[in-house]
Image (cartoon, rainbow, N blue to C red; front, side):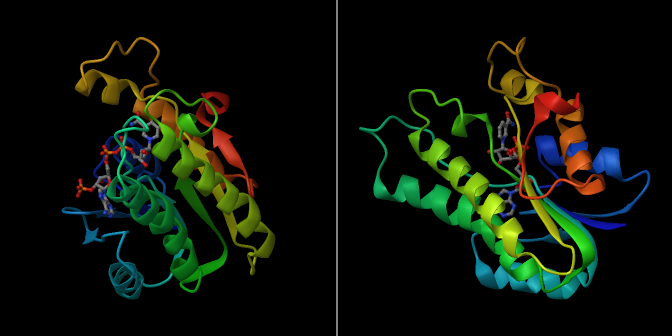
Length: 200
Ligand SMILES: NC(=O)c1ccc[n+]([C@@H]2O[C@H](COP(=O)([O-])OP(=O)(O)OC[C@H]3O[C@@H](n4cnc5c(N)ncnc54)[C@H](OP(=O)(O)O)[C@@H]3O)[C@@H](O)[C@H]2O)c1
């Protein structure tokens, strides 16, 4: 399979690439590094990526920024980042990418645990994650040529918690998180939000 991984240079993306690269042709895409570069918040950049890469069988998006901050702190621009980048960036990967995807392919987007289990300061991120989950459930109803679309919902990743100086004892190693992405690509899931804890 020819599989595009967006966010391939990140904590989760690197683990997804490592898991898939032994059996598949993996195209590593980052923002500033990788086989190809893209800015998912810019439609022209997404269109160029798909023209440059050509036909493919699966796409994983392990990218997307959104701002953490309490309600009284979050400004319009903070919400705009999450909407333009993590939400519409990933939605547009599906909207544009479906024209370039082979029959029976799959999209796997990334939401996150904060959609279902919010915390103080997560309003913008929780909103965006819930938007992604709503999108895949509905978009799956209209996909054609056997194309599937799912989201993976990671919990806190151990390596991320360590990098942030947090107690990482409850975190999940990225290599375990990656299993849910493989299940989305290789299985029959469609219109589903895959909880990473079910694939360890
Ligand atoms: N890590 C966690 O604990 C956790 C938990 C729940 C959900 N998530 C979600 O999982 C996703 C990946 O998280 P992560 O921790 O692996 O992120 P990360 O380590 O910060 O990596 C981000 C990746 O996205 C790329 N990227 C950044 N801005 C981009 C843009 N505008 N267009 C295209 N690509 C861009 C980066 O490329 P460059 O390296 O070239 O900049 C990098 O490959 C995010 O949506 C995050 O919200 C993460």
